Amino acid sequence: MGIMTNKTELAERGRRRIEWIRSRMPLLAHARQQFAESTPFSGHRIGMSLHLEPKTAVLLETLAAGGAEIVATGNHGSTQDDVVAYLRGEGMTVFGSRDDSLDAHHANVSAVLDAGPDILLDNGADLAAGVVARGSAASVIGGTEETTSGGLRLRGELGGRVTFPMIVINDSLLKAIGENRHAVGQSVVESFMRITNLMVPGRRFVVAGYGWCGRGVAQYLRALGGKVAVVEVDELKAFEAALDGYRVDRLEGLADWGEVFITATGQPDVITAQHFGLLRDGAVLANCGHFPWEIDVAGLRAAASNVHALDDAIDRIEFADGRHVILLADGRMMNLAGREPKGNSLESMDLGFLLQSLSLERVATGASELPHGAQPVPDDINRLIATRMLAAMGANR
Image 1 (tube, rainbow, N blue to C red):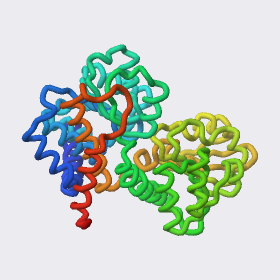
Image 2: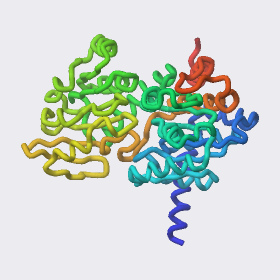
Image 3: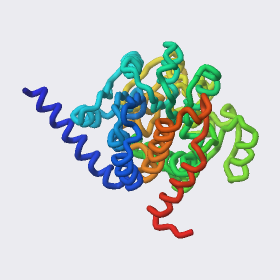
Image 4: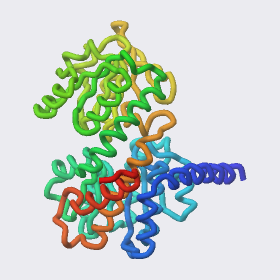
């Protein structure tokens, strides 16, 4: 009885949180109404692997209103249990919990694929990779990919083997501006402040990566008084960062200068063993990229003489020479895997998830007209959503 009560209470907590989120996402509300009338997903099963938090729940409600059967799991370390409880109570098949190990997460992804979805809503290309590995691509008509990291996998590791269309949401300039630059920038800085309770003004920050997310993180840190340097391997992006007024250098040149290091590249092995001995005493390491591979956490722990968990999102890593560094959220995406995760702003995710919804609608109704493999969001969808977002903001043009 106690367990049932706890599950009921958990689902009720999720319902209350989602109700607030839903009330502030007018773009998805409009799409939900339209989908209920047109039912573009009728007869389709959508398999999802995406952060399971309140804003994602509103996205799933929108797809379900259009007739979709939902089979879903979250991403490692960012699942919110009250949201899962609520969605299960609404009849959706949802796998995963906050405390899942990486192996358990991989099993959850497999369980989604076992259900035989014909449309994928992917994040990091885990589902697409699973479909390719199983040789079951013929049963999938297409899907969407949320992230830069997933887009890189689709075009690299999985290039030429994805025999169905995958619309990469992160290729949209609309998402890059609205969600990646402004929303990720805001949420990462807010998460750093909330998790550590450290001040930003006057502190020295090193942002690794000057893509849209890195631009946003650097911009919001500087707006709050932080001293910001940028590490960027692409010459054109490094040039842009320099003209934007940031100090630009290699990581080795900034290791002793920086007090906080935030990775935002989407690539593996950004901060590795070659850098650990160069970091100043007390340096803080954090990641906001999708995969927990930008900081070599295993190598960091192996190089340590002692590791102390100071709380659920802060580890003190001590070295034999007397120095220590602080690791946030175990190297996972700090704004969704850290303490009391909030993620990106409601308005930005309303925009981003409308991109998801309309792109999935395009797949469901016209996959045969789309090329195979990774591709950008169709231009007409970008422009329609930009117009709706401007109207929602009360902007005239």
